[in-house]
Length: 221
Image (cartoon, rainbow, N blue to C red; front, top):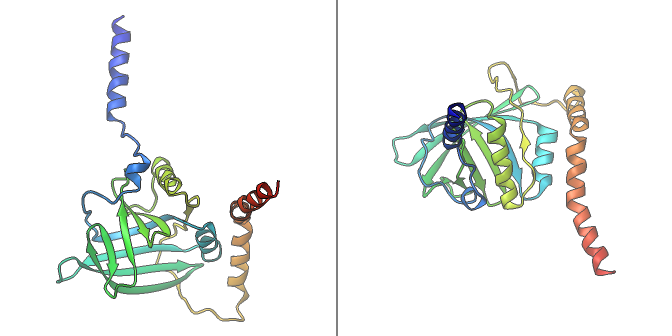
């Protein structure tokens, strides 16, 4: 009987310590507290309102993306240094962003990204233009449970299943992004990548066209 009581107590403590999954109501809202944006962030996965946007992006480019954020002398203005690697070729881009009311704005007002809730302790989830969702982490990879929550988050919005991007974040050993039209090695790599992604492409085709076909069929029944 004592052993049984001990087991019950232990199980109760485990259930208390285990984080409670966030609901759709919470996952679709902006964060309550502003995170510390400075430092390096790795782009882990993304989703889009229309599956083609993220599937084609991840199929033909298959990028690894990191961003280094540093503060400036102006309050709430940060310098972003984006690093992009595509099939061994690298590209850097620096720009200024403004942070206000849980949202990131470009200084020229070109775009806005809203930070959403996440249980991941060192992640940020960005809703860009109410069209794409992206999860970034200070780690190069997140846990399966954290990725599953992000997938649930995309389902809450009714958007496409997340695509996990390339996690090869070595930006020291890469070539300048200067593609020679006569260079076939890059085209071959893209073709090979497209072949491995054929199931995601097929799934996107089904999700895009079959619902419409069913609707037309039901109208004419």
